[in-house]
Length: 109
Length: 116
Image (cartoon, rainbow over all chains, first blue to last red; front, top):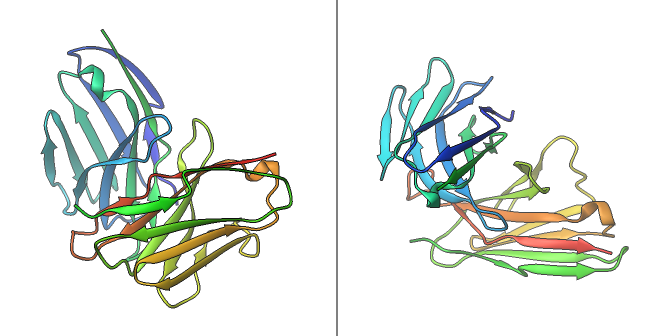
């Protein structure tokens, strides 16, 4: 049930861009994106509900391809505060929510 | 915004004891709550889905007799780790679903359980 994310880890310099992918073997109802700092709860970034939908949050945006059962998170002009572990989350039925495998992002000066 | 309160934030207990973790939705009604477990540097793994007034739905491999979930009201769900062992040491986190916010989940702050 757990969606697979790639890459597993990425290191960026401030100002660089990154793409995180999330792929599911199940048909998706929606895709969520969260960022988690060490020892803290995940922080909500955005939800995508429609196939092909794109949304943005500051310099972070995402796309959702319902047919391909994939979503991508785009981080542009990365900042030090973007460091953390990013998780996609999927709803495959009306009720159950599964997190992806996670992508560790480290932004260095 | 909606707030989910989770207590305790940290607990240390002896092997063989039981630990109860509470998850409360403070300003909204949560018909569904989720319980997750996270080991260091790993993802959050869904343990069970809790629906108010009915039995929880456990994920495959999660022992329902060991991890007792009760969702007695629309604002409270509890997870009891019974006869805890060192391998149960983990970060446990709950989330609640608010139907009024486009399926968005609200998370508790998590509970770090350490079993000695």
